[in-house]
Image (cartoon, rainbow, N blue to C red):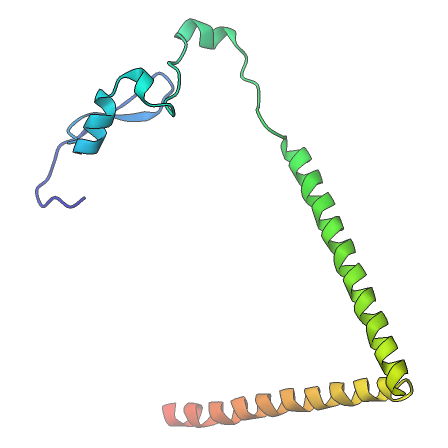
Length: 143
């Protein structure tokens, strides 16, 4: 971590079986200053841990929602979003129908949609052909 020489570091497990560094690490000035602060000076500091005897007596209770509750909430959120999208699509379709009726394009609209679809397909086929044509010279040059 920035040093060119090798260092010997010792690790150990605490009572919660978390890996901690026992010796061999030099702490920065900021960390040392933070560690020297009195307990009341830092409002973000956690209260001291209860003794081990209290830990054994208490049963660990899960906090927050369970996995099934989270899945249910996600499903409900998805359904709400899907309903909103369907509502927006229905509104767009209604506006298109109103616009077509106002301009007298009611009868032409289905044919226009079909023609636009065919034109789009032709453009896609042209792109595919161009990419195939570009691919062929690359293949022959490798031979």
